[in-house]
Length: 555
Image (tube, rainbow, N blue to C red; front, side, top):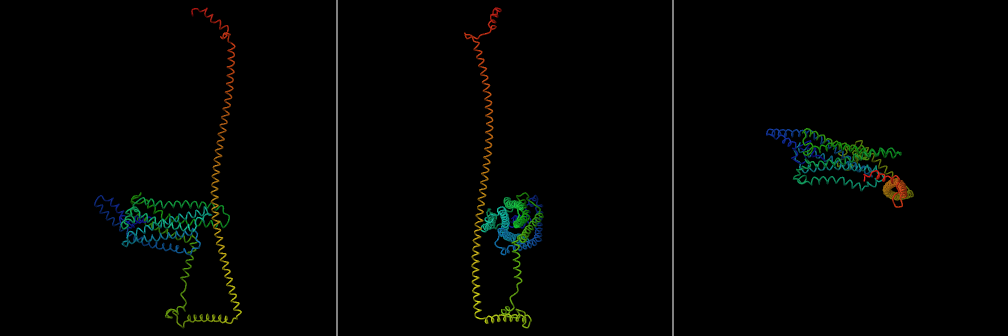
């Protein structure tokens, strides 16, 4: 996954592909110290000293690490070899677990080859390895890591569907569907990684002798994509298992039957086993992925100390090997079917190893020298004991033949008739067994059909329930709308009544005003003279004459 980066950061000269990337730390130091010729000479001397230090470090660490990875590969291969002894029929969980163990073994093999071909032989033994072979091993190891990530994601979804929809589980994960999923899990990463390393112009497999992989060793986009590929499914897996544990803890409160509680405990144990594998996955590869995205020529940290690189690389490589080793024991101890298959395989191997050689008489008959093949003399007690056993067995057979010859013809006929009857009875039993087997197969097929129909009916019921809930929601919305419209109508009616009340008051007021006007008109008409002039009071008629007589000057 990040072998090139890890190896070159931990062991900078052991890059699997590019010679230019071997001395990247030296190039950084040269650029930083290129101000004078004396500094350049000191940097070259320090570079040679660092190379010697790295070689000594490789010679001390790599042999032990290679031995440990070889042992891990052998132990992981034992789990894969025990697959023929697993109890049939295989459940989808067991099939996925065995496929995950095979992916783990593939990673162990490619990791061992990378340590030997990419690091130990070029650096310690000074053996030249073609760059295309190194790059191919690196791509295969990346494929192994990606295959395991996808396997863990599918296993998590398998557990989730089995717990959320147990009645639809058998119809979802059929053997054909599972085979297609496994083929996709294995072929997609391999094809995708080889295409990725072959699609960049003048880099990867398109470069001369595969000597240029700058997009992988120095480029930041590839590191970002790979980090997303690693942590994206990992985050989904963690969320799925948290929800699964939450559902299982809540479901345990409603179980009454002992069989249901036992099945729940088995499910919890299986889920915990897969969760342990996810934890080893994160602990084994998570720190290296974080380092892969943080340290490069275009990353956040562009330079680290040489000793820090070597120690971090040794720690990460040890974590890789420990991850594979621990996963193997998790499969062997936690999964009951794989544990039983390992026990059966061990018993078979032990019985074959303890099986004795063929009999001494067969050795005497087939070997050219009796004394050399049996290492027994003719006068030895063992040889006389063997002859005595042979004589006893031959005398027993002669007695049987003699008694058969002495038996009468009716007894022979009776025995023959009994044999015929027994043969017929066995034929009838076989026929009835075949009929029962066919009936059982038909009943199983019928049960499967009924299960499918039940699942379809449940799906249809769920759809109808959803439609009913939608219609109920729509009815509730209409009811709320109707109640709102009724409230609005009541408010408008109240306003209209108020307006009517106000209009009535205004009408009464207008009637009063009109009555008052009518009264005033009548009074005014009653005061008019026949000539049409208003009839004034006496005071009003006398006042102008008085004013004229008294004040003529005013005229």
